[in-house]
Length: 103
Image (tube, rainbow, N blue to C red; front, top):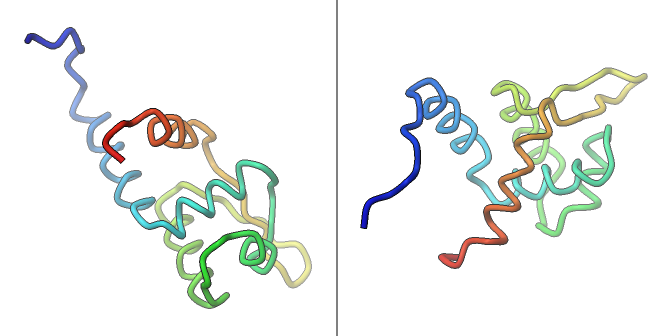
């Protein structure tokens, strides 16, 4: 069977690889899922909305990693950093996950 899929550029594959490496953790996927519904949010609010039993310090680590890799931005408001998704196209990963029969 021959695929009708077009060849994907190396730049696009490298970008996808970086994004997928960054979100390849259940807590990070949950962070995106929470921010999809309501943003911007601070770390304690995100922590209260995710299903994993994760400490705020570990959640902060995940948020920093996602921010450092360009998936999130943060804005300082008083004592808190409020996090938002940089490019909402990353949320299409949830459509892929839901429609994939391999999971």
